[in-house]
Length: 443
Image (cartoon, rainbow, N blue to C red):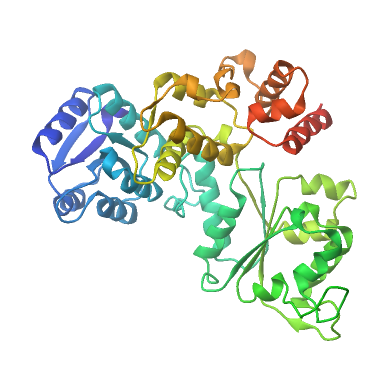
């Protein structure tokens, strides 16, 4: 509860310390203050805090230095950054270090209260299952319970040698998680090689994965190393692994078992040392049961599964992600802020394109808002007309069903035109078709 929180306010300006402290004291918080980073660290060493509200730009060590120190030494402490637009790039960087929110000066009493409440709620310690510290976020943005579970799985997967299967809808960040596993593990000094199985013609799969000798087939004017050789001593990401044809599945299974490959047109095999991470937005288990994917390969890949949550199930992460993406898109320029009406619509929306859709929208809004406020009219039609998410018992349905209702409403509004509906939803026609087919199978 906010009224029971212990808050440390850090700002080199005495007036700003006084304003923030007075407002938090009215809310019932126990407030201490510090004028710089060394004083703040000393205060935390004397007594920990539930929340640190820190300025970004201060003499000597700055707010980002404090953020890193707090994250490393007091991981249960929530963080709010106070900054002006001139330093928003630093604020975005701080959010990647674990800051829950930032306030642009000048800010209102209501904005301060909302940021503090949100930060304390998001950073409430989640059970780890073993009584240990929460896992780090690996440079990713978001502190929702769903993402904290993902961070803990990344931490466990990073130190293991077994294959990892990352599942989740399109746009949820599967490659980002794969890179985090690679970067946090003992193979981080080796190569990380992503391969999109859906983009490789079936006739070229074997060559792309295992390489070929010169003259192995028409057009092979020179020898080529495949993805496995390129990833030797590192990690190979097989994205969209559900698209692998049957012959490639059989050969992949053998490589996983033997850690040896044979390039096309060569007689000799060679050993490789590759950590396999597979990713897919399809239900591989159902495909295996239906005979559409080899069961033995599925079980081999499914040793350590990580399921990524869709954006609609990530709670308050939408706000934090939007702020970060707006900052990225704006670069050194002014960063627009969403109005309350626009923010409410963004929270109602079900995000069929997930995090990728939100990033694309942020880039568009930076252009449309031109550094000013983001208004409701600046948002795409699909977001403006998104129905409110009710929380009563009558609507106690899976969020996937809520999303499907929204897709159907947009499709009806588009007169049954799937191309137009996909444009309104911000996804491609193939994704729309797959979502409708999945609903038909479930129904």
